[in-house]
Image (tube, rainbow, N blue to C red; front, side):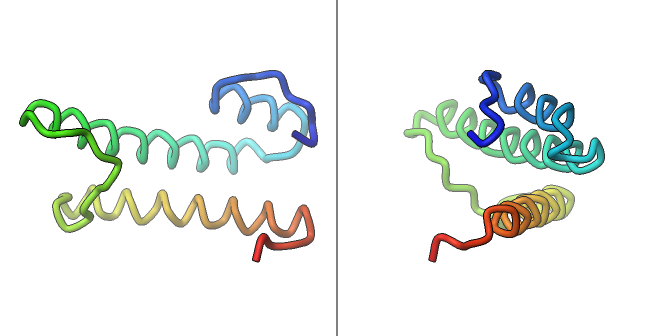
Length: 96
């Protein structure tokens, strides 16, 4: 909102934020990778549920994932946490 971006997709907004020097390219790449990993894991779970005739859900049981997928999930959450921390620092306050 601060930069008044008009881009709609997450990837386009990330690219625009790099162009505005809000994010370094490396930071945007970490955020992109985390977004794609989380989206993949969530969508794959929903497809599996639908294929089994069950209602789709956003719940993802980490214990049902392979070790590599668990590591990917952890890395993605770390990237999200770093982004949240940077956002809090930038705006100088926390929501709580």
